[in-house]
Length: 353
Ligand SMILES: NC(=O)c1ccc[n+]([C@@H]2O[C@H](COP(=O)([O-])OP(=O)(O)OC[C@H]3O[C@@H](n4cnc5c(N)ncnc54)[C@H](O)[C@@H]3O)[C@@H](O)[C@H]2O)c1
Image 1: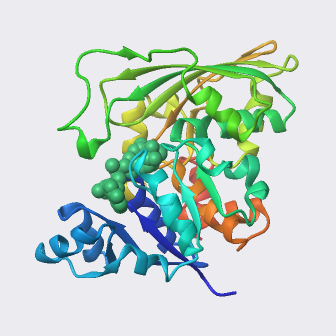
Image 2 (image 1 turned 135 degrees about the vertical axis):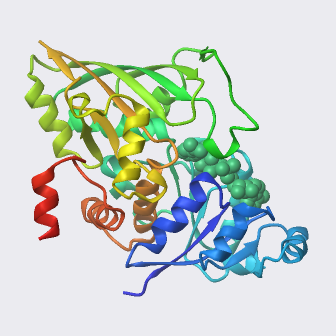
């Protein structure tokens, strides 16, 4: 089968990572990226050998005069592809939907858009098959992705009754932290539940989940603290096994010095991950506690990275390039080096042999 031809519209925090990830898949081809900026952010794409297209007619000339070899307009890009991943900012993406429909291509939106835009919200391990052949889907936000991954793991093990989580959110993304953010304060969200709990139900309406969120003065990632009522009395080992059996949840341990969200990012950097990205839910194995029918745990969500593998799977689902969710997940995870446990020395030795 020929490779799926992909474009990325909006080469920002998410778009540049999606572009990299597409280039790592054997069954996909990145035809180009489109944006409206003229500075270092899009020049990098050219240096990395990615064809750049102008997302607005007036921007093409500005890009060229900034030294960027512009390949064409966004409509020319759309005429050469099977599927577009829209990674433009919240609300702008919705305005692009008609353009994609006119071009007769499939489109994937990101979590800043409303569920109603696409009528389908995506987390690979929960509902891959329901996206097969659809024209549109929305990869849910970083926090929502983590909630669906973890609660689905417990649900599939027959353990989930209801989950209640507190989310400590990063204030801003690193690249724009000179422009935006908070300092020396913590800001509670205006309403309870915060939007992530209801958003998880756009993927799985049966989830009984409530979230409370606060914003903290850091740019590294989000941290979640969860209380889950189980369907029956259980054990720590049984709950850990449920998480171990699910894709894209990987354990970290306080006992190995992974003591905070900065430690995990340092670990990703030391392991040679592109951009120090943590694609997995980074769950503290030695913090997780089970008492009777209640489980308590904390995990890390790398907001810039966690939705990247889901986006790759969404490309295969919409185009039908892979019919089985688990097979797509395996392909994506192999290409991105996604792991179950970051510090299993024996596993690493075996891989190297
Ligand atoms: N940043 C995160 O942590 C994160 C995590 C998960 C999901 N998301 C979602 O991903 C989407 C993109 O967010 P982001 O953080 O990557 O944004 P971003 O601001 O980092 O990047 C957006 C890019 O789109 C470009 N752009 C703006 N207008 C455009 C237009 N009309 N046409 C083409 N390009 C245009 C910008 O120049 C920029 O390069 C949003 O829906 C967001 O909610 C973001």
